[in-house]
Image 1: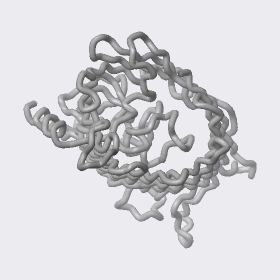
Image 2 (image 1 turned 90 degrees about the vertical axis):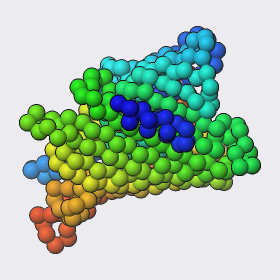
Image 3 (image 1 turned 180 degrees about the vertical axis):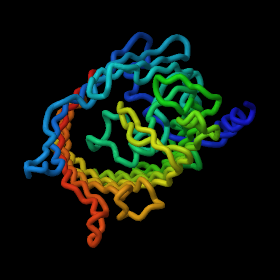
Length: 375
């Protein structure tokens, strides 16, 4: 056990990673006492899923709750804080415990240590962005697929340079960090082996309006087949950038995943991932552009693409590259209420000459979501 903790100490001394979304939301009070936090996201979906054998369309249309989350957070004298969040939406298989951790923050912003169940500190769209702060209703498919499970039990060290000047730059949080050791089994699951997942994230923000980040994860898990004694391996790395200028916001992120033995498919926020046996190399990226208008409206466009198996041709019927263009409009009524409209144009890489490998399907989607935060 000496080697993992040696690695943790080294990373703590020399690595700085950004982590402002350890839970879904940030505490609202620095004083003692309990603060109630949470939000609800009622949603409408109209998705076209092709045609039936009789020629009629298979529409998926209806109202549901994307998320319905309620929790508490607070500070305990001296130097401790707590955070608990539960998911109540039955459409996310709720109710269940989502986040629950205790933090020692005597040396913040440079150093904090948390223990419990929390969101993995990997990537921009997952690790640094809460569900209630996403610019689009859905997270990118590459993020949902390659960061699953999105939450885990373990210990996390995090911090930032705060307002301290670094290299003469008057920029707050020039460097920020987060390093975690977790079970690797996901939320609310007891670990059955001694192997652990190691995750780290680095973001450098040298000037106002620019942040450049990198993330890495490695872990081992028992194979689902009890006859296989060799442990599965899971490795991820990614890079991202955020630019803000003249009311424009540009974000882009790339994620690569290597799986030996098995792979988790799906999972996202609240969903249960599916375990598939085999060795896989996967990758994908997204880029999105937003504009803040003076009328509290934010138009946006997002392009994303995901290849679930890089070793197969994109035209292969069993594993093909999937891409989505999202056209969106966000309306921020105030600090607590937001309305989002998204139209998703989905496309699948297909062969134009081989009908067996023709993958393009009619699966575009319209989504509308209303979000209300409770604090």
